[in-house]
Amino acid sequence: MTNKTKQMKPAAKPAAKPAPTNVTPAKLHARLAPERVWLVLARQAYDQPLRQVGTVEADDGEMAGVYARSIYDEFAWVEMAVIPRDALRTVIAS
Amino acid sequence: MSEASSMSLPSAALFALIARLADNKYLLGRRYAEWCSSAPTLEASVAAAAMAQDELGHARALYPLLRTLAPEAGVAIGAEIEPETRTHFTAMRALEQPFADWPAFVAANLLIDSALTQIFVAAQASRYEPLAGRSRKVLQEERTHALYAEGWARRLAHEGGAIHAATEAALRRFWDETLCWFGPTSQAGEADVSDPLASAGVLDATPDELRLHFLAAVGPTLTAAGLALPLRRVAQTNDTTAESDAWELTAPLPWDRWDAATYHLRAAPEAETAPVAPAGASVQ
Image (cartoon, rainbow over all chains, first blue to last red; front, top):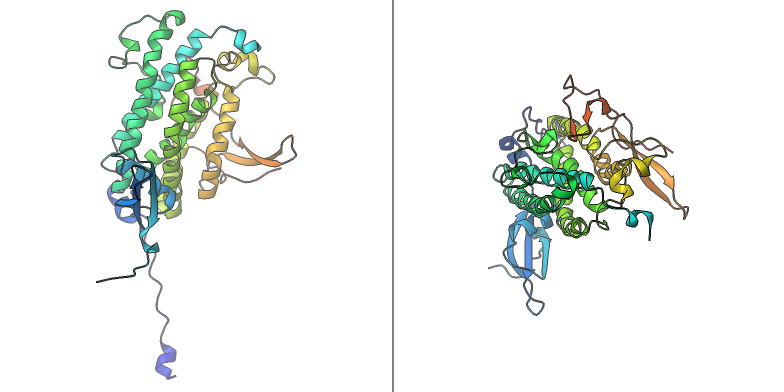
């Protein structure tokens, strides 16, 4: 290991985002944007398969469920489920 | 036949209860609706719109009861008991103006919505069947509102800094009025005779008991989020010797500013509230 390498400083941690001083919806929008996308699956009858009806962005499964209920309420579903998109394992990708 | 079931319903108190439930639901729905296109995320906005619809629907289900209760309560049937023409609302001061910011929305969602829910919980087996039936339906929808409030309170508190502080400040602005809104506190041993709704079986809890139920409902969320409100957890042992949690206030409520006739808390002389210790400190 060279002296030059020894003298290198470790990579600085990314600076924490400063807290906004004025909590407006516009400022919150960027700061509070959820990072996880959830697939929303639903079916209208038990003899039908669950199919994807859309997605929501939410921090956790409970909030994803709340959002999914609110947004995809166009039918009287007999079942609705949410699953994090990053839980899917791609098998075939073209 | 129990003592409560043989009593006649307290018409005036029942009319006032339905009126303040309907009015608070109506104004809460209006306040929610004002954020249906401006919440921090699209999903939150749509959910706010759905909650607004729920609240307005609950109000619409309650207002017609005023017409049936009015004659026995000694209230004239007129414009003031019709939802379309009513102008004098017996709602909390916190709902009279639009929410100042998103933390205020979340604070009202967590505190005021939860407080209203406690009344419906206590009315599920009400002797006044029209309220009992509506309560069971309302509670089905309120579960989603509670999840939304808890999720957003956690999220805002987790951000720290000014967002945490703004959330805590909003909660504290609504705190006293929400706690007082359950009704006046009773003297020791006088609960059954001083509260007409509980003693007649309209509700299965006195105002003091409703306050404790409310603290148990919101206390865990506030504690987990590190939001400093004047309440704490106390361990208690029940009949089966299993230990369970109860919650209590750590600061007195401002009853000198409480107007029992209108269920209104007059504004404090000064806006600032003294700092309090973080919620949730456990005592035996």
